[in-house]
Image (cartoon, rainbow, N blue to C red):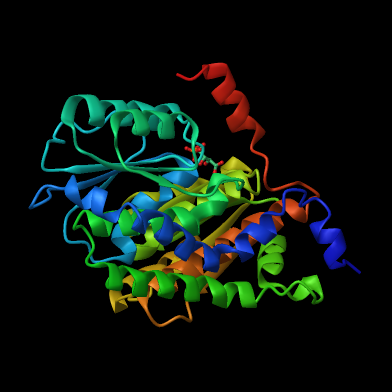
Length: 355
Ligand code: PA5
């Protein structure tokens, strides 16, 4: 019989512990940003244009989640690359997020925002070059605690980003943000509670799903607010699970990807599909999930559907996100692989030499 010790043996850097700490992380991030609130607000234009959030990988996911979780007062645009969009001007606010503070793309965006446009609201980082540059330029540095994998610090980074966004006038006042962050924490907690450390591991929903998906290319489908959660699942299956995964969203996938499944058998691949129903799914969206599953379902080895039990949208989205965190960690651990190291990313960054 598989024991919990067998499952966690490869978890040398305690990824499961980091996932379990997610509910408490939101307030840590909120507090780190709250002490910079006035400095950030002082840099904001009286009527801010867009909020531009620059960040890669685990540090970039907040840019996608922010407009899904909050009803934002201004457009929020995520930048996952070296360059700011050409339209960015003094009315806009740029936030640069890099957990390590040493990611080349984010440093490049910081340089562009700060040197050319003077619109940098804040940086969110545990240190590194980004902290150094922010201090030199007197840009508020929201200092988050280090020591985790960036993607395992999602609660901290999201709490910090939401608080910075509030200081910039993008998502409502601090009380509202605190309430929403508490909801996010509750949503994660419902999933943490389903993964106690002292039970027969084969009853853990994350492990059960990981075993269903074992050996599969994982394809994750969301819709509306769950589109960025699907993307997060994909990145977690990639980085924690070290497996190929792809994400797409309804209704767009019904206009192209659904046809691509027609000749699926010729690929010889084994695919597991994960469906993330949005909390506010309309009848039309629900029908799309059902009919598409009918049309493609027999090609997939397994189709797993997730529907949140949490009532509020923030809680529901983070509930679905947390399922992906557990499943991705168990995908690695059940194969005897440590979910934490991302050697490919490290060696790529090294070979790029800071470019
Ligand atoms: O989670 C990870 O390890 C990666 O996705 C990183 O977040 C990504 O490489 C960017 O690094 P950083 O978050 O330090 O800017």
